[in-house]
Amino acid sequence: MSNYDLAVQSDQAVLAQIAAQCRRQRLDQNMTQQQLADRAGLGVATLRRFESGEGNLSLLNLVALLRALGQLDRLTALVSSTDSSPMARLRDQGAGVYDAPARQRARPDAIAEPDDAPWQWADDGVVEENDEEADEKSEGNSLSLSTNHSQEPRE
Image (tube, rainbow, N blue to C red; front, side, top):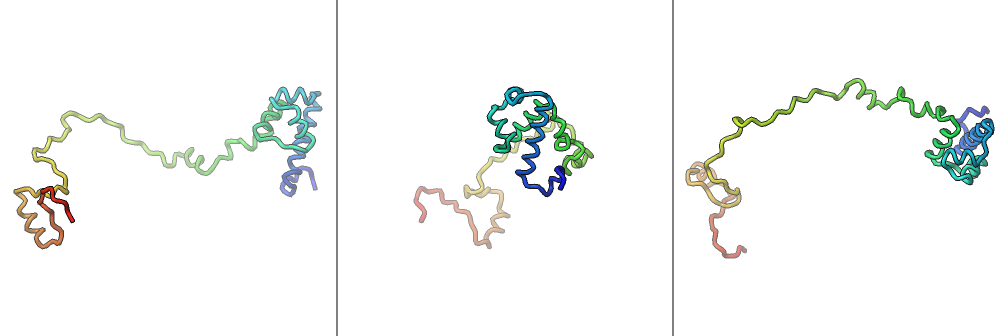
């Protein structure tokens, strides 16, 4: 089994390989753990645990560590824009984009004329005097409007 056959390795084994690679890079650059920890903004104990395989780093700390080692380009495949999501590809192709009509201000001559009839709530029970036709239609209806406006309580 090759060291690069990551698909069949456990997560811990992959993490151990990453830690070993970071340690090799640090030593190749002739840096102490303290120097690398300072450059990356990590605690030296955190770096020691990571390199020894006893601890793991957050993704944010791993990015900081790779940046301090000058190895951030190793993450290029993860952030490559050529491998975008299906929605991003559709957006790039212009799918779902349309030209909205330009907004216009209301013109003073386009304002509706006010209605002279008084406005009333539908449940007021008031029937307009010149709506005899509506009265005739509603006579056969089981629903009727009450025109009793007295203050007597309803039962």
